[in-house]
Amino acid sequence: MARAARLTRKNVMLEEEKVRRLVEHLNASSESEAIRTVIDDRLFADEVMQHVLQLRRRGTVQDAYKRTTGK
Image (cartoon, rainbow, N blue to C red; front, top):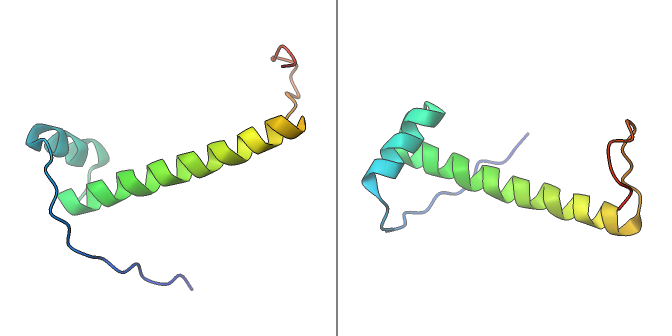
């Protein structure tokens, strides 16, 4: 069972229009939910990219459809 995240209040300066658009885009129930979602998504994407780069350095990433140049 996943452990609940511990939330803490932060005072940050954000552009209101961008936050409003983000909430709308994600169909989030609150500004806080939208911001937490984007933070989680970015951290996950960075982690995935680090693993891809590690595999690529080892030379173990291969395109099964032969679409890459081999580099």
